[in-house]
Amino acid sequence: MPRQNAPALPFPPAALRASTGSPWRDWQVEPGQGKAVSLKKLKPEAKPFSSGSKATDQAAVLAIAEELDGLQDLFFADRRFKLLVVLQGTDTSGKDGTVRGVFSRTSPLGVHTVGWKAPTEAERDHDYLWRIHQKMPGAGETMAFNRSHYEDVLVPVVNGWITPEQTAQRYAHINDFERLLAETGTVILKFMLHIGSDEQRQRLQERVDDPTKHWKFSMGDIEVRRQWADYQRAYEALLAETSTPWAPWTVVPANSKTHRNLMIATVVRDTLKALDLRYPPPNPALNGLRID
Image (cartoon, rainbow, N blue to C red; front, side, top):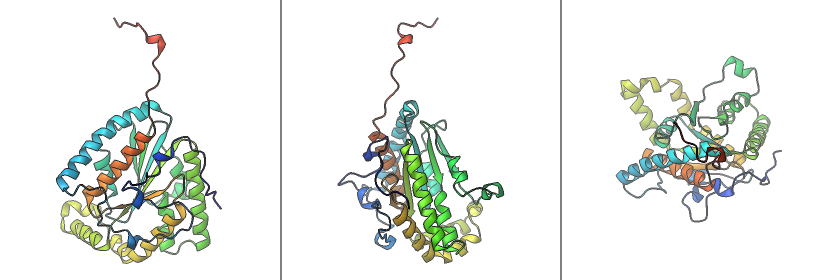
């Protein structure tokens, strides 16, 4: 079984854990393997980070996106850490929109995104984490995952392709994999984008009704929607089993697209600020240098 005790990480706990009184705190899944999680108790229509005004919240998202650009520049120069942002959620939960909204102002030199699809034949020839490890951020980089290795404890579980024993084994693999990453300087922020069934139905219908969004729709989406309750249970299980001291989960109420972006942008910003980032020391060889 994976070690659940908190390791000595190379970054401060405040980078991962919400402080007392923060609206983030109520939406973090408390680390502790097997503690029950109920998504029904976490309302997808909630807006804990909202000012109460959509226009004000939208302006705040833009302002934080600008702030993240400066912080990312400092993060890239500091190069002591890496940042992995995991965006996991059902179809239409807003993973693409989050990437656009939160990282709209950051440089593509230091922020990268992977949209995970079904594994290729070459990827299936290896263990299921092989392809994931290859896309980890390097020093000073931010990597945003649109879907992630958690698909491997969702789709196979819901469809009965792996046994409960194999599922438990994968939870252990993932926890230890993420511990390796954290202990070697990767800050892992995991967000489960939580929308309601009615909200998903509406968003899927919009894709059907708008010809410019047909490319986003697959007939398979209908079958997956029929498995809504099964996926909710699978999410509850993985949240309970893989929210660890080194990589805790945050559930993001995401019925509101603006609030979703505001919450995630705020958490990413606060995480970067908690790292006490700094530019490298000046090069003494450059003192007094004059460029002709």
